[in-house]
Image 1: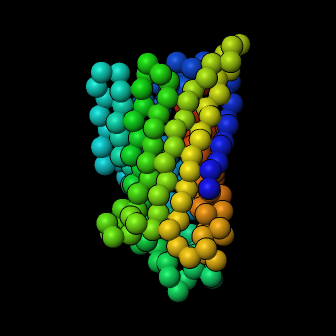
Image 2: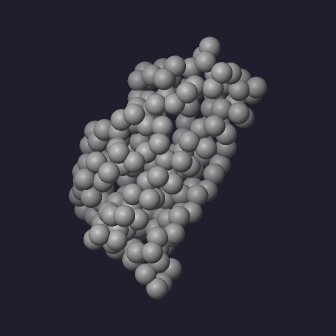
Image 3: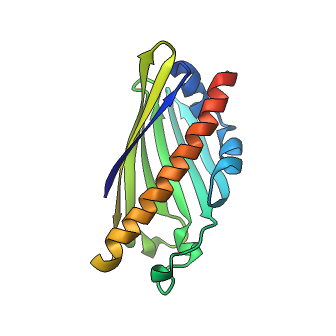
Length: 169
C-alpha cells in the first residue's frame, strides 16, 4: 500500500533542516509520539553533509482483535534507518522489525521525504512511502491500512515537534 503525507511549516528550509539534523531531536520525539512507549537512538552519524541514523521504537498500542492470535507487541517494535542529505534536502528511510530477523519476511516499509521551499519562509515536507505485509490477503488489506494510519500519526506528531524546534532556531 502506497501513501503520501504533506506537512507545511512556517519556517525557512534551513531552520527546519537544522531541527532534523539535531542529535537531540530524539529527546523531543520520544516524548511526543502517540502510541509509542519508547524511542531510542541507536546511531547518529553526520559526515560529508549526510546524516545517517537509526531509531528504535517500542509501541504501546492495542493489537486489533483480528490480529491478536498472530501478533504480539514484541513483533510491532521496529527500527527506522534513515539517511538525510543536505545537498538534496531529502531522506530515504526503511523500517524493519527490530526483535527477530525471521519476522522481516512478513513486513516491509520504505520511502522518502523531501523538504521543498515554497518561498515566504514556508517549507513543505513531502513523505512518500510503501507498506507491504506478507500475510494472507484477508489480513493484508486491513493490516496495511492500520499500519499506514499509525505511520501517519507518527509523521504528524513529528511534524508538530519539528514546527516547535524550527521556530526556536
